[in-house]
Image (cartoon, rainbow, N blue to C red; front, side, top):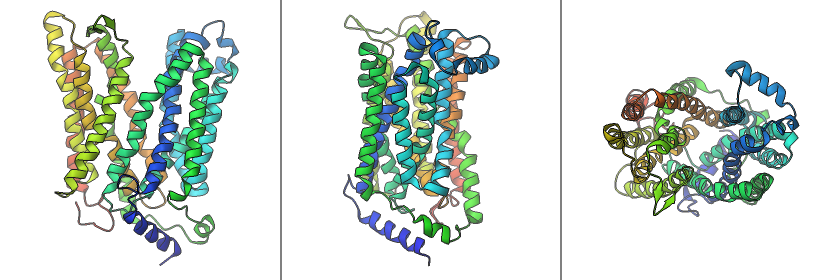
Length: 468
C-alpha cells in the first residue's frame, strides 16, 4: 500500500466523521463561501458587460480606444458579416461567456498534472481580480477579458473538484454537498446584479467593475483562511517519485461514458437556459408587465428566477435528507433523470398561456413566470449540482479536475444550441416552440435512464460495484 493510498484513506475516514457544517465537512462551508464571492464577481461583471459595451465603450467615438479591437472586429465580421454596435457587443459577450465553459478543462489539467488545486485556485482568483480592475481602463478591455477567462479556467473546475475531494467515493452526502455549493451561487446571482449593476449604471461603469474585483479578493481571502479545512494536497515530490497509477480499463470506460452522456446533459438544460434567452423576448411581447400601476422591467424576471431557484435548492436538499432517513437514496444519474422529467413540466406548462395567446391574442399574467420558474427550478436543482457530484466521484483518481472541466462543456454546447433554438421563436408558434423544449428535456431524462439501466454498474463507486 502506497503513502498516497494511506493519505486518501485517512482523508476519507476524517470526511465521514466531519459534520461540522450542516452535516457536512467544515471545508464545504469555506468552499461555498468562497464560491459565493467568486460568483458575485462573475455575475456582477456579466450583468454590466453587454450594457457597458453597447451603451458606452463600443460607440463610434469610444471604440477606437480599445487596444486590439480592430483585429477582433475583423475576425468576428469575417464570419458574421458587418455588425452594428449592439450586435458587436453581443458577439463579444457571447464569446466571453462561451469560453468561460471551455477554459476549466485546461485549468483542471494544470492542477491535476503540475500545480495542484490550491495553487491553481489562488492563481485563478488573482487573475480574475486583475481582470476586473483592468476593466477600469477602456484601452485594456481585451487583456481584462483574457485575465478573466484564464482566471475562471484555473478557478472554476478546481474548486468544484475540491468539494468532491471532501467525500469518500461512496459517501451519499456528495450530491447534497454540491446542492449546498450551488446555493452559494444562487445567493450571488441575486446580489451581484443589485450591487454591481446599480453601481455601474447609477454611479459609474468602473465602480461596478471595481466592486466585482473587490468581491473576488474577498473570495480569495476566504479561501486562504479556510485552507486547513480543505482536502489535503498530495505531496508533489511524492507524486513524482511514484509512477502515476494507470487509469486501467474500467477508468477508461468511465471516462468514455462520462464524455458520451454530454449530449444528454446538453439537452437537459435547454428549458432552464432558455429562460435567459427566448423567454424574456416572448414575455416582452405577450406578457402584461404592469403590476399595481408599476411596469416591471423585463430584466427583473431574472431575479425572480434566482430567488425561486434558491428556495427550491433548499427544498431539494431537505427532501433528499428526509428521504435518506427512510429509504435508500438514488444514485446521481437517477436523480438527474427525475430532475429532467420535472423540469420538462416548465415549458410544457407554458402551452396553456401559449394556446390562449394564439386563440385571442390577449396578454398573459406575469404569474406565469412564477409558475415556470417554480417547476423548472425544482427539476434543475437535481440536474446541474448532481451532475457535478457525478463527475467528481466517477472520474478516475488524478483526473477529477479535467473531468469537471469536461462536464462544463455541456453548458458551452448547450448555450450555443439554446441560442439556435431561440431563433425558432420567430418561425414557430409559441405552443410548438415550448412543446419542442419539453420534448427535448424529457428525451434527456429518458436517455439517462437508459444509460443507468445499461451502464449503471460502470459508474457505481469502485467500493460498491454491485450498485447498478
